[in-house]
Image (tube, rainbow, N blue to C red; front, side, top):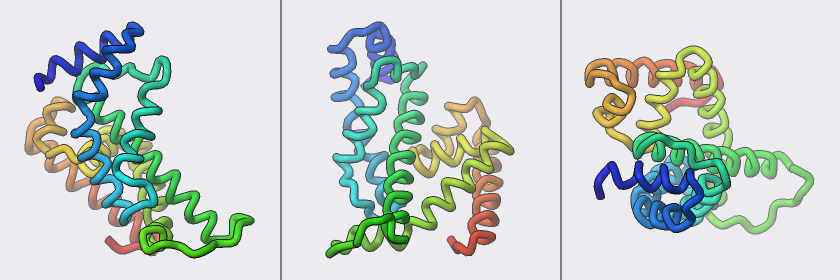
Length: 189
């Protein structure tokens, strides 16, 4: 797949071409599944399946006016953010249920129990990432694209116009910040 093909399909989809949107989804489906597997792995096997997460993210991306991505890298960054929001939303929902949430908990399968155990940590990570974004949007973007999007540091650097050395330095700074923030909240990494 040529990187330009995604950009062309994004452009056609923005102009209302429904077939371009379908072609785009078929073209990026395997990459979205890879990102989804990474997201679910970070969530200790959330109650969403990889396929479910990809489809939920696609529904968000396919809404009218949602395909404003400039190119392939931007598209995958937005897709990773959408998946992160879905996983964090699920973690928050599980955390509410764990605290009562007005509903009795019934017979949970092992995957759901693991989400319950990680829900607080995922929410704390999301909050720490929001604080990092307030201080340095670029560092937060490096984390989002690297950790949640599964991109290499080289790919992140290219997408952001950074040298490899700067991308590595930003990744190290961001990790140190998040580590401190999560430790402050009582979570160890």
